[in-house]
Amino acid sequence: MNNSDPKAQIELLQKRIRELESNIDSDSSEEKIKQLRQEMGLLQAERDKLDSIWKKTQLARHEKRPYTLDYIHRIFSDFQEIHGDRRFADDPAIICGMAHFEGRQVMVIGHQKGRDLKERQYRNFGCANPEGYRKALRVMKMAEKYQRPLITLVDTPGAYPSIGAEERGQAEAIALNIREMAALTIPILVVVIGEGGSGGALGIAVGDRILMLENSFYSVISPEGCSAILWKDQEHMREAAQALKITAEDLLSFGLIDEVVPEPENGAHADHDAAAEILKNHLRRHLEDLLAIDVETRLNERYRKFRSMGVIESRAPVAAGR
Amino acid sequence: MAWFKKEKQPIAPTPEEARVVRTEGLFTKCPQCSRALWKKDLEDNLGVCTKCSYHFRISARRRLELLFDEGRYTEYGSDLFSPDPLGFHDKRAYADRLQEARRTTGLNDAVINAAGQLSGRKVLVCAMESNFISGSMGCVVGEMITLAVEKAVEDQTPLVIISASGGARMHEGTFSLMQMAKICSALARLDRLRIPYVSILTDPTTGGVTASFAMLGDLNIAEPGALIGFAGPRVIEQTIRQKLPKGFQRSEFLMERGMLDAIVDRRQIKDFLTRSLCFFCDR
Image (cartoon, rainbow over all chains, first blue to last red; front, side, top):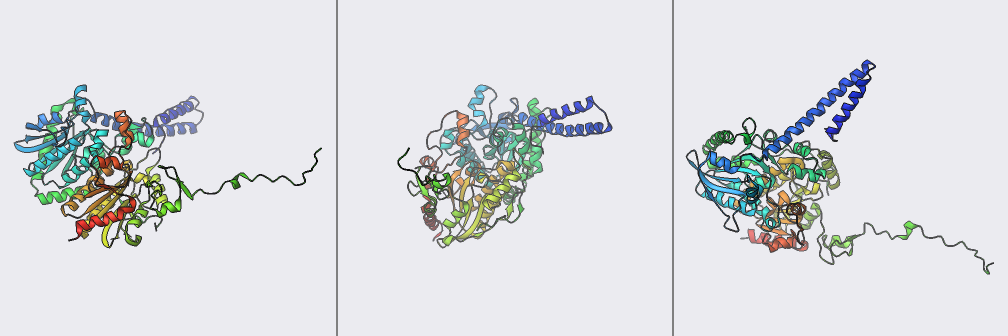
């Protein structure tokens, strides 16, 4: 892969082609033009790919995209929200509640973003504090106690980075959730509906099945953050988004998720009802599958699922250490 | 005309190089108290400043030598190797970064798995190497720590993990993120089987490492002055647009907020482990 800016390269090639075209003297320059055209085509294809991946990440954050509550109202009935972590506060960035899914009692947990400025601030842009994760864990344990399946909807730029969040143990809250979710005896279905932002997403995203909406992404760091750290500027978000391979399609091919849930033609934001209907069908099928498996098998499979994630080779170290 | 005639040539000035006493490599300056420390002294003192007890960063190998009886241990999993699963490329190819890190550390990745005796008791220790791409966690680190946890489960042996890491490794993308879930799944089993796990957080422990195994020990202890947190200080500063208070995210700050069980001086860590493992294991 070429490292320098493809846009500048395309322009350079165009210029050279024009120069050659202006004074065609022999067959060799025609040959040359053909070759340059081919090169340019490849570069343009690369550029288009970069654009399409970037478009996807922008769709995942689209301001009209359906959020957790939009899905809850369309997919579940009798939703009753449960508030607070019984330790410190209620975090509006994570929503928990009891609901019916096609006549069955389930627990639903999801990150919640806001639609207008006021609500966005109230929901803290979907960035949860430790209280949010602790509330989620409390509710998960309750679901386990009464053996109700758990459905989580992931949509966060990441856990909130602030002085208060650090003081109250953001890392510990997420860590504990991950470990406890691995061992919950109830079926867990996870759907990434928009942004799957790193640890903040994973804090409610360990389960038996991991689904992703077509235009969602799931990443270890935001493309902006990655650009800032590795490229040391904010200009390379597109390159970062591509290099990180964060689309649903990529992650499915790596075996990190189980299924890509298609969206309506122009994306979920164009038709909330249709998006919810498709998701509902997928949830039904997976939930039925999971309920048919006994607890021990399900837990073993969940373990194997995460256990097998990663690509590793074996080779002796270069210099023997001691 | 002068009364005396200079017959001897004036003494040539000492050449510039000869004027300096060669001390580079022999001394190092303590970043906390600014005193010059003789490196040999510093090393004998386990990398702790002899004057102000500032804890210098030390290598994973050195840590293992300090913990195990007579510094003896056996390694496992050292052959695991990252094939660069994404073909990641920023300003530099990740493959090159890996190559360089392997050359400078002599390790395949950012952790060493070791088994041996600690005060006569069999223990498993994972020591992270912060010099290997900031000690970041990719597939290999995830796999090796999971292997250690599984071995602890299988052999019913106590586990100690010494963290020194900037978090999940960006260059392996979502694979790195999922290592958190992989390790924590194994830790859930360890926890249910009541096999002791002590997490030692050293400078620095941040990001996905703190938000997974480093905070899940039966005991979470830290060395003095270590940077420990979820988000890096710069990210927080940029988000809230405020200067961070002094000592923020340092061990002492975390202990005050109830996030650590103890702060233990490096020179006492072995003793601390011996006593806690006695408490957990001895009937």
